[in-house]
Image 1: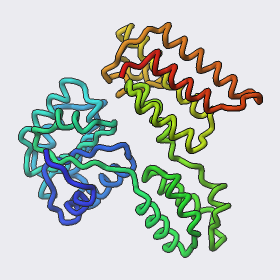
Image 2: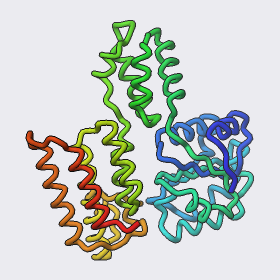
Image 3: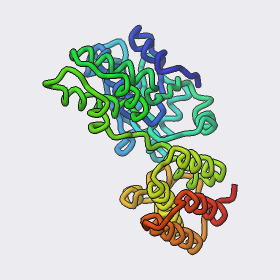
Image 4: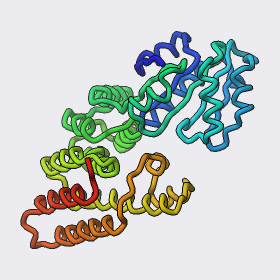
Length: 331
């Protein structure tokens, strides 16, 4: 497996010097879809493009698409979406192909769940693929995109609004949607002010709050403590933090029940708010009575936080983090 940056992939597409297989990882699905659109647009003929989905994967059709010659193009373009959701036998088919891919075809694979670098190396390290991680936009990219779109539409935005957008946006999809929302608002106006931006755009960076859930789910005490302190330091609403604790605890309780019942129905899990990667992950069994005790404790804190008599809410938050850690976490 070799690795390329997103910029290198875009250069490959622009120069039409593509490797036989690209694996796109990262959680910004919007940007991955934009890259796929670019590849489709640059293809010589749409009839030589095929898209395969993990949920209804047909091994024979997949291999046939990759081995056949293009009808109107120099090579076939085959797209496989959601590799992580493939079942055992279809996954085996794909992995065997990746040992010796057809250089006359282009295979583009998307992997839409979070995956550790060590797991990536373990699963794909020996295969003939090019890995490209699609990261969310950084602050410079957000700033340049917004400025470019405003200039293109002959509109103006102040620096304070730009700074707010840079701090509030965490994906390309949100960046595109929120920029268009602001431009629609300015239909009959020239300039946008910070007050208007604050009214129109809600912060989308909830990564810290969800990091709490990840820390608890992955049994990472240090991460739980550090994220909790970061949120307290940023004066995050205590109710938001305690609700994140409760959400993680409820997920653990539901996963425990599903695992004990040997249920692997992903649609049922999803209806309960459990994602496929959470159900598939290596999971430590915890006494349900312990989990319920901690949930009750956090609910009491939530009740106290809603009371007007609570003078030091963040002490209660820290206590909750320590109780979760002591009762349920081992590392």
